Length: 144
Image (cartoon, rainbow, N blue to C red):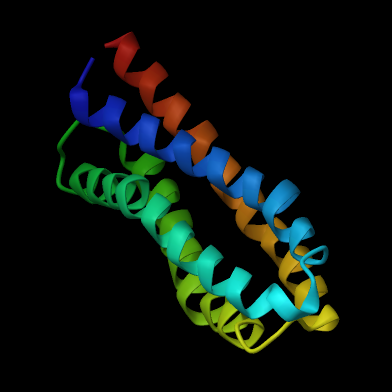
């Protein structure tokens, strides 16, 4: 099995695990943080989530990029769909979710928090779809 495909699959599934943990545990728990500690909690969350994503996200993006150049011999439809999802995920993270967290960094806001949880389902579903695509890439590679 091609090591780039294995690295990509591992990183993608790590990201799937991270997004589900954030969706089902971290974001709902934010509502339970006392108001006088929320600003500190949000800053802590932002620092730590970046540290967690620094490895997995970089490996996922780099390996997906390599597939576009033929590394790993991944079929064009799989890397096109997977790459498009990755672009949507990271553009939405930078353009929508990071600013939303920036606003929450000023203090807890129930409406912003509800919007964060509701809209993050989109990223959760899309990253899960990327996980399935990564498994299809593995299956394709194993069949060769």
